[in-house]
Length: 310
Ligand code: NAI
Image 1 (tube, rainbow, N blue to C red):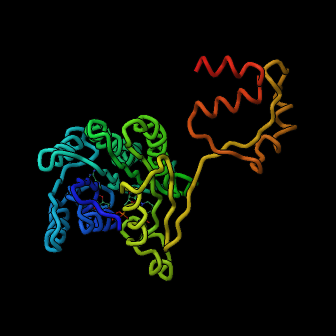
Image 2: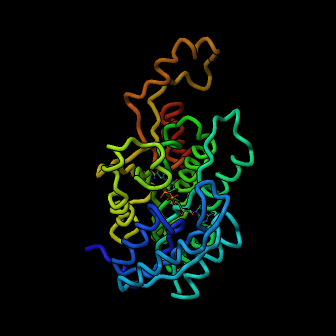
């Protein structure tokens, strides 16, 4: 059984919805949990500290250990305070689940840039701020599990969610970098793209589907990614209604004209179908691996030298 005894977890946005579910599951499995939530409205305009307190009470009533943080993830000092609360109380941070979020949907041409920045501020910067505070602690411990929260809106696109989509793909960029920076110290960084009948999802899904998308089904994947059992880093799991699958960025085989060729826009137009053909697409572990696969195509004879340069 997956357990978190002697482990310390932080769950942001844990006052309701998916975050509450994650916090309760981790606590039920032995983790000491910082229940963080600023509280308040879906657009992040108001706050209510009692939400997080209520979840911490539920955990304690079930015999678990929890403490409350009502700091905002989008405030640098607040993000540091969330991590400090864990370290001051329990001396470590083993798990960080970046889950807090808000929505300010609008068609892009009508989207106020303040609403763009507010959404980036919570999802992308908030994730970066809390992770930046927790990462050195995890490094020192030589152990950590971080779960980012992305969304199909960011991975694939969605109408009226330019701010949210940009932020949600931004956290994937952050994950891609940190999976490399955490490698030597057993810090695994993965992401979940949830679908659940909670506040952010419940407005958009039809009723028959809502009954299927229980948050507990997302929590099963998140708890696994947060556990010592999870040996992967850099995975994106889409989870909905008991279905789990990996989403990945891949590069097509493409067309190699070569560095000496006289490539014109007309050559691109002529070969566009082959350039965008994804039938033989492959993933890359890192940007360096992507570079190596490029060298194989453009200058296979120079690959030896190129590898030593990098
Ligand atoms: P929710 O609205 O039920 O819960 C989010 C929590 O984050 C709220 O309690 C809110 O008070 C808190 N929060 C907002 N700003 C904060 C801040 N600055 N600092 C600390 N806490 C803050 O949302 P839900 O539906 O549970 O979603 C959780 C996560 O999953 C979000 O990141 C969301 O974008 C993502 N997601 C959810 C989907 C769904 O179907 N529910 C679909 C795709 C992604």
